[in-house]
Length: 200
Image 1 (cartoon, rainbow, N blue to C red):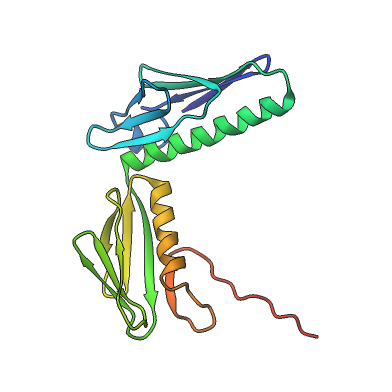
Image 2: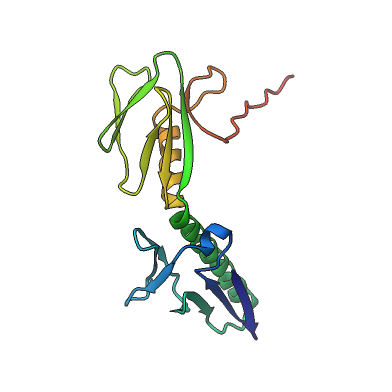
């Protein structure tokens, strides 16, 4: 649950960490702590923790399972708009963190190509992608890999941003999917469109 309010041009947001959105979160004992340096918000479900960076120029507090943010009293519309955007981004990050700590996010990837496949050895992903050598990638500590056969796997993590970044890194940097040859690494749910050809 998110409550917003304003006094003059002072914007504020209160986020109820225990009753944020879906019923799954209602049953979760979520706790929040602000670092002594007031640089990040630490969210915990008792087993795992996520850190969220806190932008400068705002005041923060956590009490009774509720996180509150309030920006500076700015008279200019430009500054007020700036802080409003910052608050909105912060709420989105908190929401994703709460949801991720309740039920981890998942992203599926598929490897398409004759002879293309992958292996998991400990915390290392090894790929055969048509190169003269295998490609090895270290899996981040906060991400786990679920094997779905020789050419498909699922990445799982409570950190939605880290998960998306790693999946995109694998897809773009190892063997970017080619819509014309039909080869490469695809992210489930992503649309790969062919470029329009200008006919003279």
